[in-house]
Image (tube, rainbow, N blue to C red):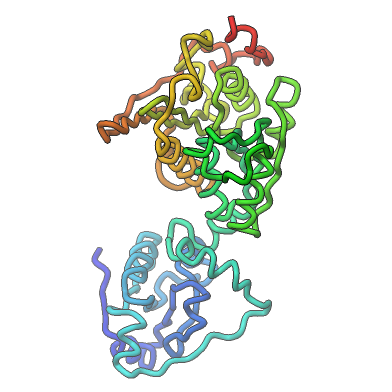
Amino acid sequence: MTIIEITPREAQRRMETSGAVLVDVREEHERELGMAEGARGIARDELEQETGFHFHDRDTELVLICQSGGRSMLAAEALQRQGYRNVCSIRGGTLRWIAEGLPMGRPEPPAQPRDLDFHERYSRHLLLPEIGMRGQKRLAMARVLMLGAGGLGSPAAFYLAAAGIGELRLVDDDVVERSNLHRQILHTDADIGMPKVDSAEVRLSALNPRMKVDAVAERVTSANIERLLEGVDVVVDGADNFPVRYLLNDACVHLGVPLVYGAVHRFDGQVSVFDAGRHRGEAPCYRCLFPEPPPADAAPNCSEAGVLGVLPGVVGMLQATEALKLLLHVGEPLRGRLLHYDALGMRFRETQLTPDPDCPVCAAGTEFPGYIDYEAFCAG
């Protein structure tokens, strides 16, 4: 069915003659600047999620208004899909209401003082119906493990902090070196010799003091891996070596935590989401792609093979995107897909991944084999 659009004056007439309910679907901080007189303020996200709570009768005549008409149309479509039969949207929104000289009012003051910092800091997220207030509060409650404060961890951590993650557990046992600075943007020349997690905590706290940074200057081993994953919602892999990567995969499968994988080499990068712990037999894990870690001489790291400085920025940003999607339950994660990035050719390509029915870690019905420290194997 097509949503009817009406003018502000027609909306006012319907309110006066038939008792239509005018609903301003903008966010609270927008409505505080003024709203159409007689309107009831219910943010779009809240209205779509809890329509029945606000309007039990699906024959209620609802007239929706936003800033310029776009969000109210989308909200009207959502309500129509829920079975509300008498919904329309105001063409041109509040801007046209004001232009036509119709009366404006202000909402009732909130029972509790509004958090100005929260609304200003995340105002662009709050405008997105896929996030809104509900999603932003979900991010504020989230805890993410960022393994590595280097090339991948730097951009990923910056964007997760900016997005409003409640807590970022940052794990790295290394110190800042001058050779890091061309790609590890969390650190500066003045930080050389400082533990990376300490340098990172300073930058991230300066960017978003609302977020808690749990700086852990430890090397990841089988002895501490479960403690490091305790209570986290998503793990972002910024490791630069195979022993840690396999250990992290096994722990995430065992504990049922989604793992956002990223890797860089010279001019190429890879990103994927391994979520086999929550989707046994449906989604692959890292071992389904690489059953066993290679020897060290077959997989040189950045210090041996080199890496284009901006490459970790692209891959880390993609990892942060996937982490946010997982936390917000929006979009289509890279689960079962491996994204390849060729910086020299500026091309992306995708490889479909399937779970290995014989995987020793994630195959359905398989008992967890325990953790293995692969240091000796990889050095062999």
